[in-house]
Length: 374
Length: 57
Image (cartoon, rainbow over all chains, first blue to last red; front, side, top):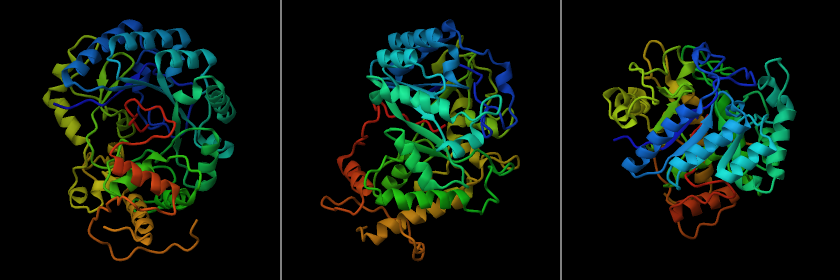
């Protein structure tokens, strides 16, 4: 039985920003157009019941992440109702999280998150010039000042600091990693997540010249060098995970290491889809053959189905190159969508393979220069 | 920040560097990570952490 760890709940299918690299809207997949704009409460209530049953059966808690699009487009009243429904249905040790661009993070939303114990993660790419290169609204205007206002409301509220889980930044390899890191620290975020740009072997990520180029690996290595001498660091979780894997620990974040990670993605209309970042691969890459509407079907049956089990296994790196690679236990093969090609499906190394090796080598160098015993 | 990037030696077989009990390093981050690995549970400073969010997008 696949243990589900995380449920990505796309409560809104639209977004109030128009980020240029977005895997949902900018990479050729128009599935969002066929989704209702907001998840209705009846659909959510049925989902909540199914998730509650899932937790009882697997005897493990889950994290439910309000996602999208921009989840706060459901409005503050419906958001409050959704939190209430989920908290009433789920076991107490389940977590709720909100992944938001921060623009609509009002005092009322923050109060709701406080009442229902919802952790808040905010997407922002760095200082104004870095962020506003790509994170623009539907009129092409930069979003930075509005996002920062949301962050300030959060950290300024009485419970905000305990709810703030961190910031999430997509790497611009032409930017200064130190300046980016220092800015993200200055937001007061307790942790920082960095993501590579989405792309694959057929459509290279923006900023990557070739599969063998090292723009992202060098960016991360420069960040690593600074991070390890920073006397007041803010945890950078992807680096922490990779370092811990080198020193006998385990990873947490999706796409790093070889830990099991059961994730469910539920669309706004209640249907289950595959890993939603696969939208950047092809139009149907995130769709199951069997149209499974969680609103009407039994989740347990679906999780036990051959199709789901095959999909779950396909999330692991399957290419012979990865299987034979000495870096696999740390790299983990990266995010599945980065391994895609039309020719070989997911059976490729990551498009960031060279970058990952570069970064892992740099981590090893840092550890070995400190003469740490093996 | 090191200004001269040294290249690693020949690629060694994968090694896991064990977290020794009394290692004190010249890095706040490395000290924290070694402590987390030794203690077997992540110490997440200030971050909301009931079931630590793992999603990465």
